[in-house]
Length: 448
Image (cartoon, rainbow, N blue to C red; front, side, top):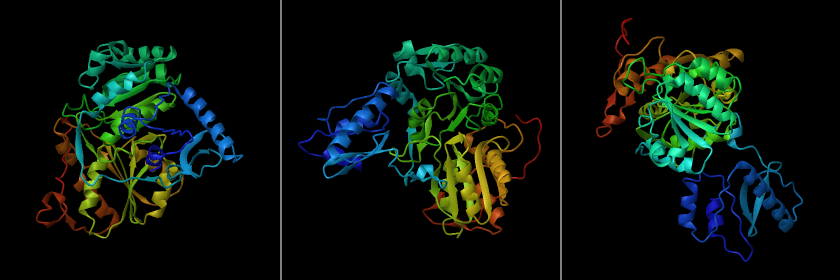
């Protein structure tokens, strides 16, 4: 890579390496590989911009290129001189095109235990104006290390979420950045008016981490945030991010910090699988393309991406080609990427989300298809128009129809063909099995 070349570079001339990296991970990695280099950590964006312009000016004097200095985007090595490329010279990256950015998926999925907990502590040390604010759920939201080791950057306001929203709006007006940690239902549904009036309307720089998204909790209807995306989509100014694996959990704080204004994050806790390599962090507005295909467009987010990957592996020999898109940015919605994928796929679109099928990714996709007159069928998988009861996550995603078997069944329905699959859980014998039939749903209004 270019960074590796820069680290190994030997020259009589001074060498500069300018990196956009997560300081909690990238700098220790660089120091381990090149301990003799001098490292400069920028205290804020303004200092970084100033340093970029100085380096650009030096580069143009050395190279006599006569180009624009501008904002430096990336570096390269040419004739033993580091060339800093300006915005005017830069070609659009894959992330800026209508097709999204191809992303590798780990061949072996590791499970990371509580990735947010330790990372939050290191991250907060680098951001002295950031304040973690909790509502009597400090340990449950993995913020206990901040309470114990950085008490000057920690506030617990008790079980008073409405007051917490307005209080954090006040902190943002005083140039602090509040990072609210609580369950998704308690920072969207319960204090909705304060979220809209105290944070959304004035467009204040408040970051909200909503844990236990969708059906990731056995706590039942009172704790299951199945409508949080729908609520936040209805408030102008709020951006919505969702973590799908440990890599995105470890990079979402940097993404949210770069956004000026309110951000709602659907956060994962506890044991979190790592689907994406550590060198492929979350990027705001970038859609990950996990597989290419011309038969079915599959759009997933959050925990549903892991289920979708499992389903894809089970039907690799079926002859159905799937273009799989993973969304980590839900608001603003990636209209151009969805349009390109939907129009290029033969049979139609399937969305799969850990949320009500109304108001979330499925609804946003339907709006895009309707507004642009795309005549393709859409199948939405997620929580149907009902409240769920309390149970394990694996049971609930199967019961309410957004596990890997439900996805395979939806692909069969969309393509009008029966798929023969290889169940990876029985890979030792490579037994061919038919798609599991879901139990017939029975309306039970008393179910919570």
